[in-house]
Amino acid sequence: MGSCPWLADEDAPAVLPLRQAIAANARVIREELPTTARAVVANLLG
Image (cartoon, rainbow, N blue to C red; front, side, top):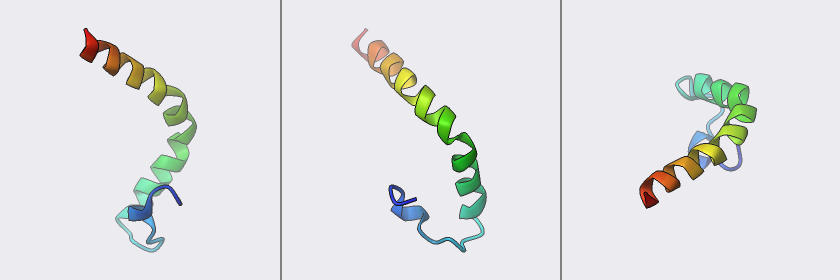
């Protein structure tokens, strides 16, 4: 998680489920986020 320095503590119990969720959803996040961002920008620009 080099890109998430606030999640650097491997042993933090509160962070572990979050890290697992990110890992499980990384592919979906990478695929969906650009589409979502474009939709948000399009809505903002009206």
